[in-house]
Amino acid sequence: MLILGIILLIIGFLTGISILWTIGIILVIIGLVLWVLGAVGHSVGGRKHYW
Image 1 (tube, rainbow, N blue to C red):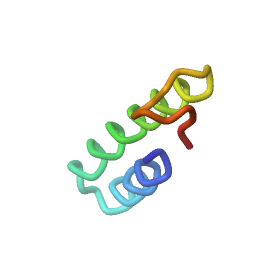
Image 2: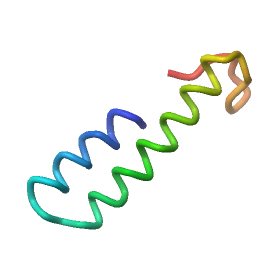
Image 3: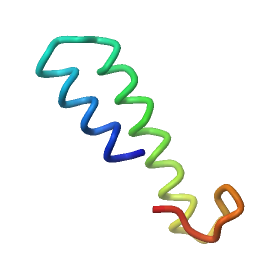
Image 4: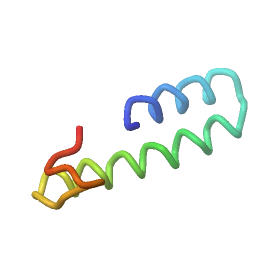
């Protein structure tokens, strides 16, 4: 999710499509939250780790 968000940010920036920029920011934030939760040992979606 994090990588997809970064890709959408880049595409949105290069093409000037603001909806891709917005979706990219949302996916990056969600990806970072899930990554941090998984890194500190909390179960995410029933799994011990998330990557």
